[in-house]
Image 1 (tube, protein in one colour):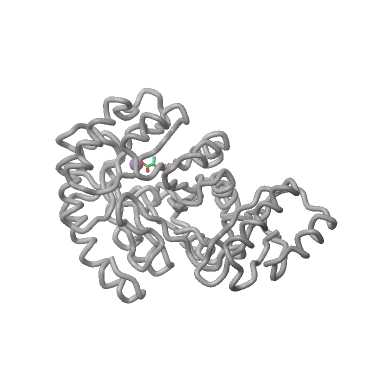
Image 2 (cartoon, rainbow, N blue to C red; image 1 turned 30 degrees about the vertical axis):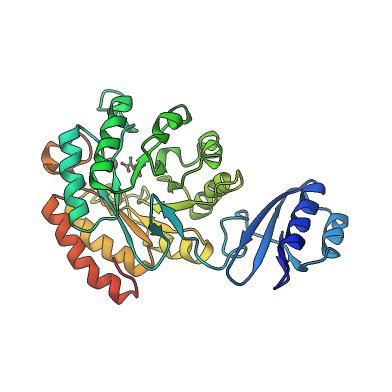
Length: 338
Ligand code: PEP
Ligand code: MN
């Protein structure tokens, strides 16, 4: 349930209310909106406890939340969450945030060259896997610990915040040094132990939709992070597995529309993994903006044919720059900027 706090209630009244919620054995989760403050109340309810809360000063009304996602839903927070990444990059605001870079950090030179170029083309964030989830154990798994100082040097050199996947909670401490956003990969979307650990982190988290997960399951994965106290969660649609063989996955554009309606969390689209094909990425990026995406995650490589991972879906620097140019008009048509 959610306690809607009376407009104009002072800080002390709100504090007392929060204390009461805790004293009754619930976990309070206050959300300070521009117009309204609400307190999401997590835990087993009884009619008696609800009645106690209803009589507390500052309570306008108490409403039940029917959906399984209590904290990620728009019911509890009508306005879209805006997450600050690094210093000054806002995800969930008016500007569509482009995250560019290679699938995997392969070497200092490889990462630096592409990072410089995506920055120059207008990307606001840098991507690059250090720990890679590969289907085969015989394939390149990422540079692991060796990649951390490389990524750190490059991101500092180009001055862009960096998003990278955390495959295992045991790597969180090491990645803390370099990651501005922790990415949870599709294969880990329901790794509840990892999500719980990320809920305790002091950094934003981006959760990618599992390849056979429903929208509701994605939202409940986000719930695992938020319930631990980390509100800075973004969701990512990266294609789901269907019977179609022309594409690596099928970009579920309607999931973007649904997520934007159901949840206040920013939604990112990954047209690279969704299609698996470089030439589809520009059109899918435009479709994502039309559907209301708050950002895009686009794989880019200096020499896609030599990429250690995901070359077929990686844009060349020139293709990336062209995408940025052509996307700008679409963003403006959608009332956004890039
Ligand atoms: C990636 O972003 O490189 C990645 C592995 O993505 P996903 O988890 O969506 O497959
Ligand atoms: Mn990839």
